[in-house]
Image 1 (cartoon, rainbow, N blue to C red):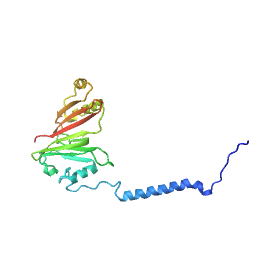
Image 2 (cartoon, rainbow, N blue to C red):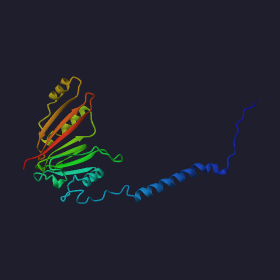
Image 3 (cartoon, helix red, strand yellow):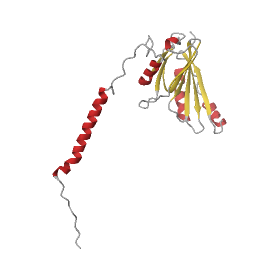
Image 4 (spheres, rainbow, N blue to C red):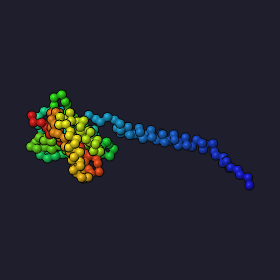
Length: 227
């Protein structure tokens, strides 16, 4: 038996079929992109209006203000002018308002919380947070709590906090004491605290809350300075 291969003759246009399909797909992508851009995708966020921010252009925590924070991922709070009026910030006289975790699936999950304490030579600090809570007492803002994002291994959390000692004015980290706390946990959950420090013109305390499996979430408690 003689072996042979069969070559099927194809129409001349068959060779152009893949290229033709590719051109159609490219054209489709171009039309889709054009429609998305015409609907605002890629455009800068519009300047906020009063109601979305305060009259002094700091963040407002009204429903409109929080929606703007969700879109911009930025929140800015000024603690340098003395007691911060709750009503002016869109907050209740007594209570708490939490921003996050983000419910927008198409956005970065982090918020960038800038807090200005007005300390000498320092303008404030930008916290990267998965969520943050503002608490008011007697008509003024009494504290802010920010949860860091994402959870990180114990040693990375410790190293990160050590690098912030000078900025926040914390006492130097006693590593031996921290490792003793880890050992005393006996394989269970544990935490360690740095601060408070007031070098930024506000009191900042960090608490690293660590799971037995290793990851730590750092919670920053910020309290306005008495002025």
